[in-house]
Length: 169
Image 1: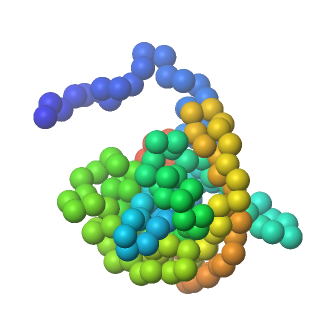
Image 2: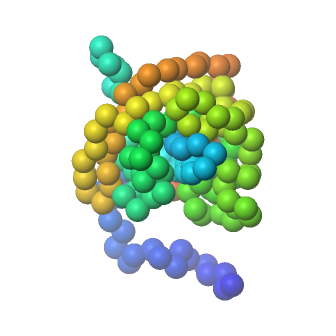
């Protein structure tokens, strides 16, 4: 492995929209779906909650992700907020850090009717895939919120901004 002083994939003229997205930032979530026979997860920070008679979570997912395949098959998922202590796990599920044995071996998970839930995640939602559409290089999923658990205050929430993880202020 060679260490470079600059990012090896950086463009000479970075995409302005990508840079803008990086400045927006937001809470980091882990989306999981499946059961003991087949499960998948993905770190997601491009999401929002829309309130209404049937509240939903809107998220941009990688169209090539295993998560999207399992979410489509099962129809159910878990959206859990990550904390600062989960940053290595976030990297593992994003595919940017080693995960010997797979990312699900990096932490304890428990089965729910919606999919695997990170045991340490105190705030999470069980969701049902309602719809999807291609948007840019992503798939926008609309996931109806079927169950919510709000745990302890998220004083140590994991945030993502400008390509890096940060602690909540």
